[in-house]
Length: 138
Length: 261
Image 1: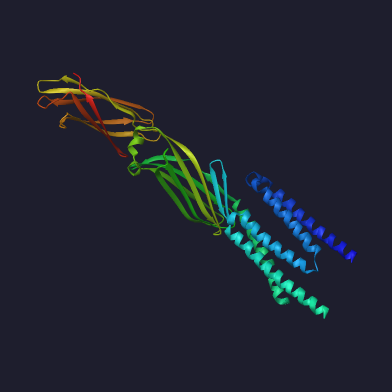
Image 2 (image 1 turned 90 degrees about the vertical axis):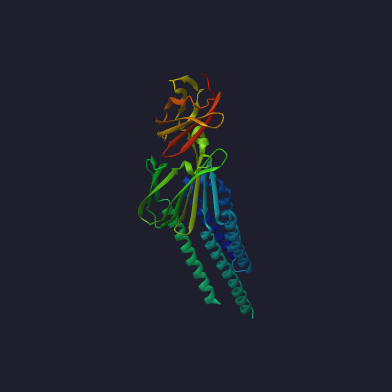
């Protein structure tokens, strides 16, 4: 039991570390544009921090119903995060007397759609998990 | 249940791959669009000044650019819109170059209260708006302001005090100076000036016509001499009406002056 827990913690740690590497590479890639998107750095940091926590917890609670609850929450978080961070899909940046407006609603819609499908998949997986568990018990 | 789950899993994977592919190619393509501005040209066409700006757009990306619209709005210090011009290109295909000429034409007759700007220097605000739809999925717009110094073509237009001299047995001569400075860097003034002198009863007592030519940045001064018949009533005060006519505008100035002899 203890060995199983240690293995899960190790696996969760590796997955979290992988996400951290992705975050690190992402920050390196956006370095040339940091002047323009610097104001969003806190939002980006927050997103990756929460994502790492979710991935760690999902792996830690794998094999339990809590895993599906965390996965569902993660999808919900991603939807709300992107709706809020992308200002409902309209990015308005002003520098001195220059104003730029980019409409990213198509991308936001895609992200929401993917996560809604992900939520549906999580719910079905949870039902399937409970079904298999009850089958094993009887 | 397992089939449904598998289908959902694959759907999610396909959507994520499509999303990643689209995001990467759109960002890559957008950074491959090059815009260069050519040398602006000023010219006078019929009754308007045209400021033509060429934009060379090289769409080296993977997606077409749709509905490219460039609008320039010239406003005075109070925010009144004086001029609005737009240029439109419905589509710039991928891997193609396109030249878009954006013309800003100043037609005095279409400007509200244009008479003010013929005699007063001013600062205009020029608002540039550029909008396009990239790959039909990303509407984009950019706007910026710049200031345009406006030099009045008839700056400091003035009519001096007229003097009356006897010319011969039947006529007298009224003479006065008309002057102005052409502060406009764009307009070369070339036209005619019609002058009328009216007495205090509103009767026309003398008429003259002069042609004038004032290149950009020059001063123009002319002594006008008008013969007045001795049979008409010449009052102490007269009204001088000067009408400047060019291909671009017509401007009338009226001045009430004491006639000295």
